[in-house]
Image 1 (spheres, rainbow, N blue to C red):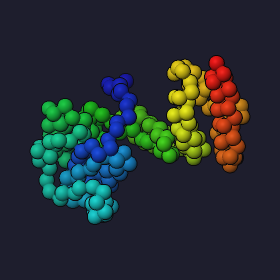
Image 2 (tube, rainbow, N blue to C red):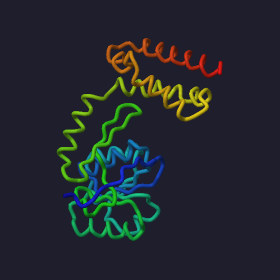
Image 3 (spheres, rainbow, N blue to C red):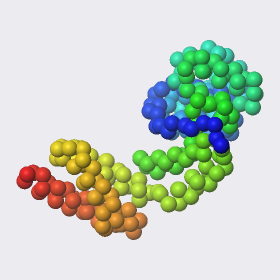
Image 4 (tube, rainbow, N blue to C red):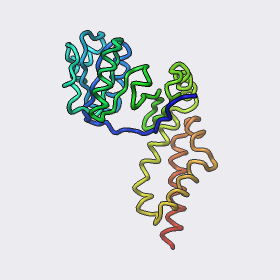
Length: 222
């Protein structure tokens, strides 16, 4: 039985100061994940792979080629350690915990107060897969299978729905009214996802306009 149950959340890391210690292939993966969330990424490492050097040359990250010190944690929201130095990893975890920081020691769940799930991204849609640290390999398989099922049509529809959120907020007097409208559109017949899979983008736009017209007739009249 797994010892921890994690609280799943989505963090807004835009321009937030984050630290990665270690810059090999695994460190690169964590750096890229933070950059995908628009975090401000500072990397401390004695050696870095070519891809990390390239990110630094492009100005995407700040890279310092030196040993980590506890002072490097100051002012950071979170730290990810991707080193093979066990004493160093333990030291980073201990110091981060003292500061009530978010800390992740890669592949060492007992030295984490948050874990990094496998992420499927398609446009505005992000699906997180976690095995609570039990099996990263299984998480990668689930990621691959989910990506085969949910992809571009869902992302395209999400963008369309986002485009009418303001209209819905202005028209519908209650949250429940908005909920009924959007659930009817998402789960209705014809299925907008199947239409998008068939390439009928204009048909989905027409369907949305039709449902908007019906809603406006009902709510404006009332």
